[in-house]
Structures are given as C-alpha cells and as structure tokens.
Amino acid sequence: MTQRVLLIVSGGIAAYKALELVRLLKRRGIAVRGVLTESAKQFVTPLSLGVLTEDHVYGDMFDLKEEREIGHIQLSRQADLIVIAPATANILARMAAGIADDLATTILLATDKPVLAVPAMNVRMWHHRATQRNLDTLRSDGIHILEPASGAMACGEYGKGRLPEPEEIVAEIERLLSFVRAEPVEALPFSSGSERPSTGSGRTEVLKGRHILVTAGPTHEPIDPVRYIANRSSGKQGFAIAAAAVRAGARVTLIAGPVHLPTPAGVERIDVETAREMLTAVEAALPADAAIMVAAVADWRTADAADQKIKKDGSGQPAPLALVENPDILATLGRHAQRPALLVGFAAETQSIADHAQAKLMKKGADWIVANDVSGDVMGGDSNAVQIVTAAGIDIWPPLPKDQVATRLIEKVAHALADRD
Ligand code: C5P
Image 1 (tube, helix red, strand yellow):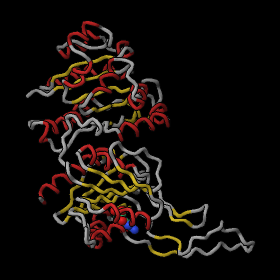
Image 2 (cartoon, rainbow, N blue to C red; image 1 turned 135 degrees about the vertical axis):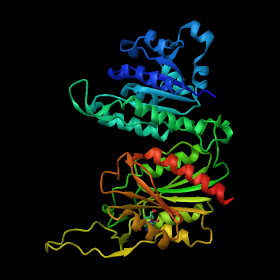
Image 3 (spheres, helix red, strand yellow; image 1 turned 90 degrees about the horizontal axis):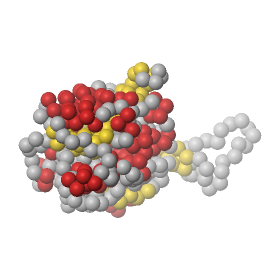
Image 4 (cartoon, rainbow, N blue to C red; image 1 turned 120 degrees about the horizontal axis):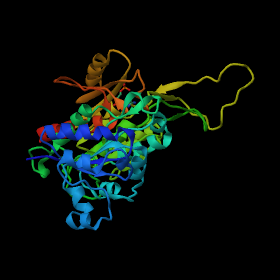
C-alpha cells in the first residue's frame, strides 16, 4: 500500500530544499501532498511543488473550493505522517501554543497522525530560550523533532540551524513510516508521536492495560533549610520515556525529582525531593508491569540536615558535613516482593561504560541497564547515546534525540512484556 506524507513547507530560506525532499520521497514510492504557508510561497511556488507532488497544493484555509473538495480535517487525517520541513521558529511557536491561524497550523492541531518537524533557522533563533522552550513542549506533546545540522548559514553566520540534508530527512521519514507499514493500525508496535493521549482516537496501544513506573530527574538532599546536595540531571530523558509510554497506551506513574519540566499529557506525576521520598513514592506506586528507573538519585545524603542555616563560625574552618548512603531504589525493587516483571535501570558513566553496566545489572537485580556516556553534555542536553545491556548481550544505539531514545526504549519494553506473557 502506498504510504502518504503530508508535507507542510513553512517560510524560510531552506524551503527550496523541500522540492528535493519531494523528489526523493516520490522516487521511493511515497505519495506526497503539499501545503505551503503564506510565507513559504515567497520561496517556493505552488506550481513547482504541485508539479513534483503531482497533486493540488493547499495553502489557503478560506479557499471555498478547497474546503468543499477536501476540508482541513480530512487533509490532516489522509496522511500516514505529517512532515513540516523546513519548520521555522514561528511555526514551532504557534504549534507549541496550540494556535491555529492558517491552514498548516489548523491541520497540525486537528491531526491524529504522527508529526515530524524539521526545524531550520538562524543559529541565534535556534538557541533562543523561547525556541528551546517551544521544542521541549512539542517533544513532550509527542512531536518528533529532527535536529538541525551545523554549518555556514545563508545569513552569513555559522552554527546549528541548517536544514538537514534531504537524504537524512527521508531516512527519518522512512523510519517513522516503518511503524505504520504493512500492519493494520491496531497492531502497530507503538503509537506514533503526535497522537495525543487525550484524544484516544486511532491510538495503537501495545501497552494498554500495563502500568509503567518511571523515575526521573535528580534528588535534592538537604544540608540545611537553604542548601542541598544535587546533580545535573534535567529529567528530560525520564519525562520523554513517560510520554512515550502513555502514547503506547500504558498507565504511567512518573515519580519526579525537582525539575522544571511540564507534565506529559496523560501521565500521573508525583513530585518528590529526596531519595528517601522517591523510594516511598515508588513502593506506594507498586504493582507495576515495568519500572524504568531513570532518576539520577543522589548516592549520599547528609547524616543530619540542620534545622537552621549553618553559619560561618569565624574560625575559617568549614562546618563538617557527615554523609550517609541513600537507599538504592533500583536494587530495592530488584529484590522486592512486588518486583515488576521488567526492571530497567540507567547507568550514567564517563568511562568503561559497558563493563560498569554489566556489573550493575547483577548488583541491582535489574533486567536491563541503559548505559549512557555522560562525559559530554548529555545531562541537560537533548540527545543521548545509549547502550542497552541485558543478560543476552549489548545493543548499541546511535546518538539520538532523547525523545527518540524514549520511543525506541518503549517499543523494546512492549516487546519484552509481550514475550513474558
Ligand atoms: O549506581 P548508580 O547510581 O550508577 O545506578 C544508577 C541506576 O540506579 C539508575 O537506574 C538509578 O535510577 C538507580 N539508583 C537508584 N537509587 C539510588 C542510586 C541509583 O534507584 N540510590
């Protein structure tokens, strides 16, 4: 069966590359229907896009003929995948805010299909906090984001923000389409990105009826009322996993340390501060079919947190800080009477990654350890290179955005739970 991509082209200097993208997709037998935003028409004409797609090009929401022949709801539903390439900072912002003020954004709000956004913009616009905040929102809404490439920009600056090469975009489109290939919707391995949990329509629920427990973020261990011991964990990977599990139909309990992230739609979130609170919340959330322990739990806490702020005593000597070991939540679950059928730990390492992960598997009684090299900017960053260590061997994944690591991991969890039935 021919697969169909609805390609939304928004207005940026990289819009011309959309034509090459269409050519490559058509060569692979993928049908493409084009939507141009008003500003995209400054860069690409409806005629050139229409010739390549061999279809009408849509653009004007209030074109009565278009509305009569095919409404925006139908446009948004008749594709297997919606791709926005290039996606400008502006369209990403409107998507993140749920604004529907033209045909493209109305389609994006109305769709129940997976959505891939391929941003391209000036390097400063890419790194702007507003853009990064919008991207975080879109990721937690389940939108797939293909990160831009780095290099010289049309505006003369250098850095991240270039549209990836069309071949790279095609590879990502084919990867996403592979989840909707050959099988009826109900039998898909997981529900694809943009399918909002709240809609319930068209979702593929391979984890339906399952309870998945996820821990995420750091813990804070108080020293006194104003100071604490912490680490650099952002919680992004754990939140992305919780979101992916909901999209796969699971009931998800997310036990979160102190982080500044929005709660993914459909997730039950319990906020905690310390390792001991996290352990209590985890045990209270049992039973679960799978537990994925992503939190960077502090190994140590102060033996006695002071009730009052610790003052300098004038001696020049720092106040002594006695530490005691925190409970190991993962290891506790590993030997728990209500141990989840699948227990997954994470291991942040800076060296001998696989060896340390292998040892951790045994020590903690986990089924899998997802080992990641945190010597770069993984903690707080948006991508992650992981190795999944199991009793059967090691599965090495390429560096991927954290939401894609999450989606793949949830697919693997779904298969493992199905195998255990
Ligand atoms: O021993 P290490 O901290 O490297 O182990 C990491 C794994 O163990 C992660 O899955 C983390 O969530 C979990 N962990 C835990 N409780 C601790 C320490 C780590 O659950 N006190």
